[in-house]
Image (tube, rainbow, N blue to C red; front, side):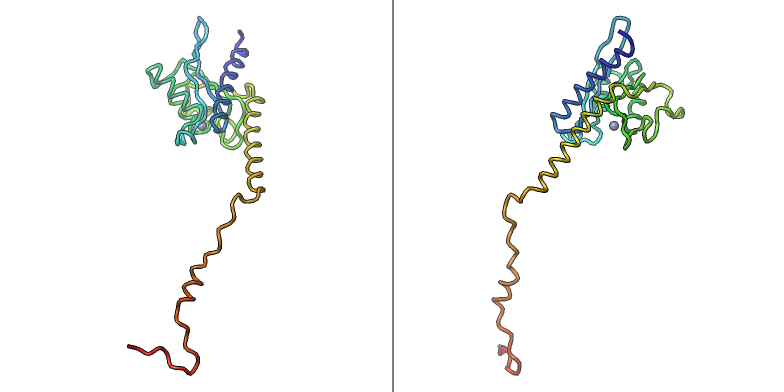
Length: 199
Ligand code: ZN
């Protein structure tokens, strides 16, 4: 298997993980961590994006996979590992991958909004931060991006359908408490008449 073929194979595994995120109602991003040796390769860990379901803003696919891999290998550093992720890493994930001394990061689609591997900024190219992690983008970029585009298009359509639909229940009646209070007050004395007698 050539390196290019291996990258495609590993990215397909990451795409499977993105579909798991989709099934969980999360933004579909998936990651795998692999270790290559003379005897072949081993998938060390997988992860998919799940911040909503786990109430964890840091639960991006890369972080989920990193935590699994570090636990399984019993080491907070993973210098022999390569991480494949379907979307360009954000700044949080880029730094976490560098802290883990990941050997190589490969991503699929670029993220023009939060990408920290060349789109918005490139933390991997910042030599003051990173001496360890090689970077490659654009592997299976089209299918990796398509799953995201379909997810957001569907979500927009669902929101539009909800806002166009008639309300499911009658709107609540206008509160009448104020009018009731006015009705039970004694009538105001007419001009020229004496007010209510004091005790
Ligand atoms: Zn991230």
